[in-house]
Length: 477
Image 1: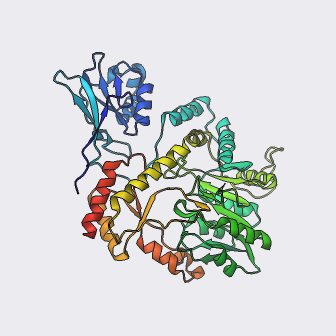
Image 2: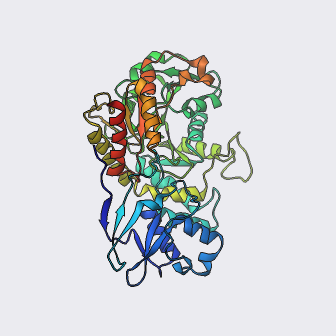
Image 3: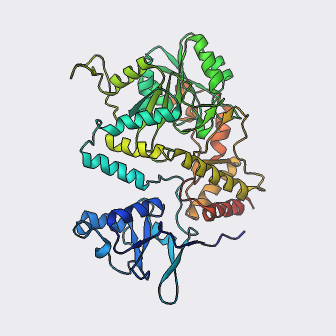
């Protein structure tokens, strides 16, 4: 199996800038092309060199790019930036010029054949840049500002619910939801064994008792049947987690819960846009919670949101988010609350990202399809099982399962090839802080010991997929 040759693309504005262009224009090009750099040409289209976001950051920091807002300060022939500061270090080497005998730029090569690949990374676009710059210049940089309301309105509309309450991260969204629903000491809350620790931590923050249940082998999430078996007279809430973009059996779970007077808090941190029976996840719970961490489908760096159709719950969530203060009487605290507010700067990024969420979901689905094609024929590699028609999953990160004894050699080989991979979460029952709540959960154990997340982001193309496939073929040969 041979790696794909560097992809040659025609001379496009996305990868090339003129030395007379403004710094702001070049920043936007470097963001939108996803490479963090552009080639610089003169008026005669002769290649001068390369400029990166690191170059611009340094020039802004020392004031050079302020004094000369064009690229006049940029040294000709600057090919590689020294001491890269961004987390996608050395990305500028991906972009290679194609020149004729006279030095005129005729095309570019995109070569990811040797560059380090992260398992996930945010794609900050020119739209995000303009929004956060607008919020910064406006002076509204704390939790007050127009972008917070815009973000809440646009995201709740995306989910299909009436109210959104933006918060500082996904974990506090879960905690806020449980507190607003009155969950406290003596109450039991059902959680899945296979999830990120934030799910169970939010229950413990309330002083409630988590009841761990195994996940279903098909959906990878809790099911109505496991919930039913775990219910007791003290069960006051259920937190179904839509794991790795795969919806839980959320319709039957909520129907069962409502028949018993039990609250449902959906954990949608990894499943923006997933659907069940035609409805978006987030529409089923009394309160549903999303995360906007840097690796999520929609990101604000850190951030989260509670969404609900209940005006009463939305009001309670807002009061609790802001120290328990009355919205009508300054510094009058009606109850013990929290400082769980999001900033206007973060909300500006999130509000901008919503407009391209479907583009991100389509891109991730294409990447997963490339992996399926590249890894087919390796009998020990399993992709997530197909779900019945009522489930509509999304791809957050591409997931595969491999034999448990092969996973560590695979991940080590990927690391040596400069490819980052990640194992699935550990079962909650296996983690020291939650030992007293542990249950026998064989499905969670099997998934946890065999699951691997593969790189899934704007930096993944056919070349990267073939590099990953080469690692798999070498390990499973």
